[in-house]
Image 1 (cartoon, one colour):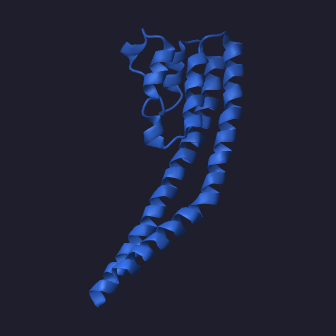
Image 2: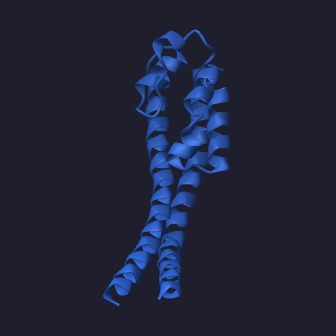
Image 3: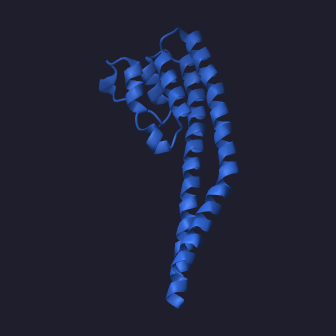
Length: 161
């Protein structure tokens, strides 16, 4: 009997931990959007005060993006697409997040300095909305995921008892 009870507790705990894992996914997305917001601010400053190729500026503005120097011969939009290819899985981004990232990279570097600054400012606002949505998701769904995980684990444990 004590082993059955221990097994039931462990199954319940595993369900709760599964819920916590889903909460971590939500937090990963929020953290990326925060880092990207900092990146956009840094990029805006770099575009304003440094005259360099857009790939060099993006490379210098943070750890999110890194383009190999031998890649600079390719168009920036291609380098951007290849650099964000695994972001959805790695950062648990939504389809809307990925669409914004793709659009941002396609248009970046195609206009003069003022046009680029306007482009960056536009996407700062759009990503700010995404970030507040991610914050709301964490508030609304974190208790739900933990509760469902715990109750799912308890239900499974009761079936074994």
